[in-house]
Picture 1: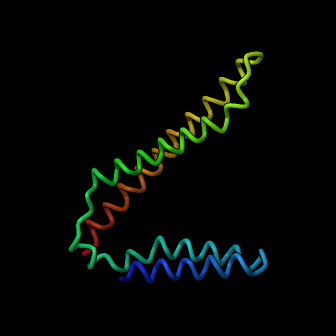
Picture 2: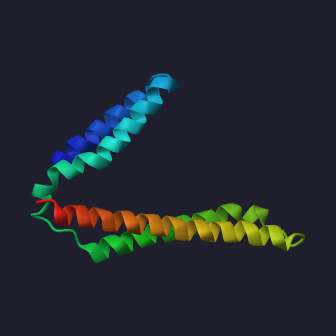
Length: 121
C-alpha cells in the first residue's frame, strides 16, 4: 500500500507542475520524480517479505532497451540515403552507441539498487 501512496505523491507533484507556470512547474516535476525514486528506500523492510526475482527484472529491462533501440532505428530510417553512406553510417553508429550506453547505465543502476537493498538492514 505504501507504493500506492508514493505513486499518488508523484502524480500530485507532476499534475500541479503541469498546471502552474514553467518556472514553478519544472522544479515540482523534478521533485515529484526524485521523491518517487527515493521514497521506496524508506519501505525496504516491508519489501524483504517479497524478494525480487532478479533474472526476471534484468530480462525485462533488457527487453525494454531492445524495444527502445528498435524504435530509434525506425525513427532514423528517413535519414538513410544511398547518396551519402558516411552520414548513414554515423547516424546508425550513434544510435548503436546510445543503445549500449543506456544498457550500461540501467544495468549499473540495477546493481546499485541491489547492493543498497542488501546492505540496509
